[in-house]
Length: 183
Picture 1 (cartoon, one colour):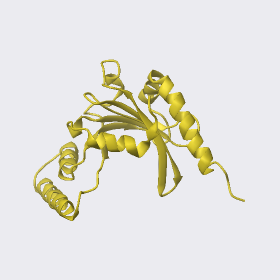
Picture 2 (tube, helix red, strand yellow):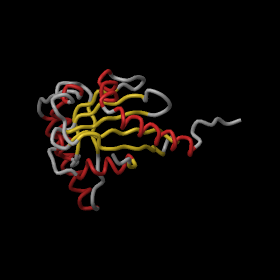
Picture 3 (cartoon, one colour):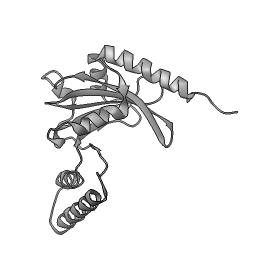
Picture 4 (tube, one colour):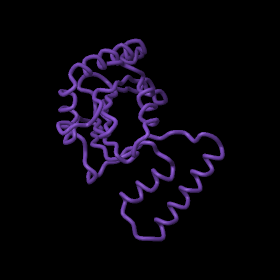
């Protein structure tokens, strides 16, 4: 198991050549200490675990690793289904100015079509994600001030990764002196 910077993990997710709407995520507060835990999974790609914290309002830091090569029958129920209300997306920057203009045009047209025709929020979300070329999106079970039960179950399932990532994240937090107050 190789621990990497959390942005390297997200970069790997964005580079996977798979259906972008097949991703699922579970996230919430860390069990102990500051920061958040996130599991992101795709049936054909696997499961990644990330731990992050805000060093300051503009600098998010963290670590992550791949914990499973695929989402098997035991893991699948721990991730939200298509019908769950929460949504997340991973974005990637446009390659250049022309690509940015193309994305903006597609987004504008998508919003225009949805404004003129009856639609539901799920279809709008999917169409917007496709218009902006989001490489990964889907439902998320997220608790801002707590931990969903599925997050606890995933943490228990990957105990070794949990210990290793928590240790690495705690080292980053200590190095950044985030826990230190001002006088």
